[in-house]
Length: 271
Image 1 (cartoon, rainbow, N blue to C red):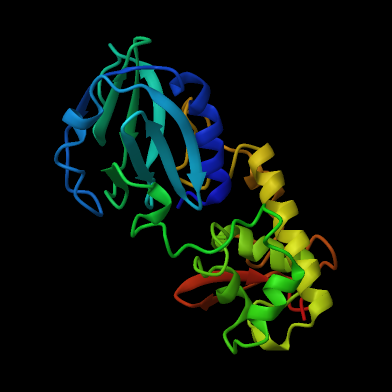
Image 2: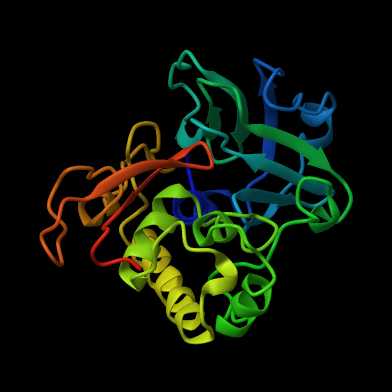
């Protein structure tokens, strides 16, 4: 599933090709995604100019003169820029034809994504309004995490994956951050000291920044706006490495199911 680095990689890749462009036409080939594609999307966006492409959590905000297209890539979605004449692929569900002669196409084999239109402030939209702080912003610091963690008995991994606490720290980056911070993923959040919360926050920021620099992590479905894979997979130290040697101590990386998601960790390095 595309996480924050993959979404940010997509945003930074497509934004230079979209901002300032007029939308000639919108074609919706399949409305039945996680939510129905807004019925009036084509009419609302036709002739509009795109003024910005922003990100909030894992949502992309394609802002036009009269409103915003809110896009979520779901489990398997991606956005890519192609020439208008490029043949459609099987799971291309929405296409934005631009004045430049290019098309932005939303492809989503599993159809868990979202493409909706709003004329209101997108940050007040029901999909977005309850999202937590951005992990790469100054608001996310050790004190913020400590104050929340000290009131919670939930496992620390589940806490940092809670989108109402901090957005975009999905399974891959939660596992990697906890390993680098030396914190066991099942440790109760309220048992994490302030100093360890500060270290974990710093590690989350570092891991996410590295992943963005590497263009995200391609495990199966993710490709950026140019159809290229991300390369952070080569830097994964625990995720998906069950049974392999820990890069720090040599012990076998362990795997377990936590909150219906697989978790990888080193039983010797993480406490």
